Image 1 (cartoon, one colour):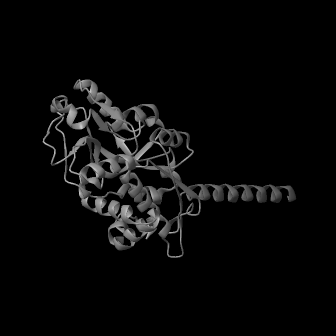
Image 2 (spheres, rainbow, N blue to C red):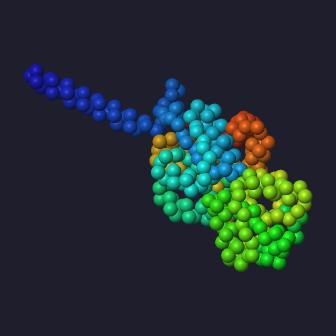
Image 3 (cartoon, helix red, strand yellow):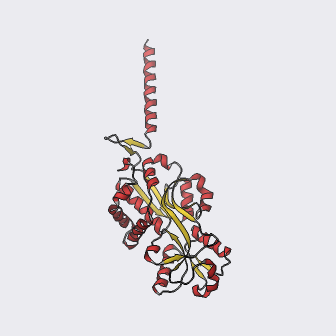
Length: 301
């Protein structure tokens, strides 16, 4: 009889432990606060955002950082070239990228890493790329460039070679048989070249894209692209595999995150004019809290 009681107690203990473990596993992504609301149990865990050094990528990422830190999350942001960003996310070494140009401009990266990533939202839904000139330049199409080589000194001012637009521009040079050279630089260096030429009303061609604050600061135009070399994209939000399971509340926020063009330009301009990127993004967030909080699930508010 004594052995039966011991055996019964053991069964009860095993059953209780099993129920507790199962319950804990079900609560791994979220938990309830005193009011019965669901909260991220991983809030104190670091979430790593990687971003390319492009104006819109800087803006998206630091706005998300400001909003999430305001809600108590531990956010780390790091600038990196696009190739290593995709590789890091695919390996699970980082969590989020807010500025993946898909499905076209970053097609090579997606082909290589896409099966190991999750696309959960769009920071901006109307991405375009192309060759850009000031409106005062009397050239309107890529097909006119070979007749105006001297005007532009045979140069197209580009950004880093790892960017999709750099690859598209090389393709355009080949497709149109252009006797031009793409000058590889960086986003800031390209914009400095644009400013110098614009201030003097001199001709210049750059590799431009929307969204970018250049469209708010200067009167610019895309050169017509009759061969369709430069595609339309979205600025997608991609994560490492399993992120949505580990951080379901943050994932829901990122799924809803989306800026319209003029709001984005306003944010980018605020960051450009500010002394500190995060502080400027934080101030913009505080001034547009109603908008940003409309993207947040109830569990985050």
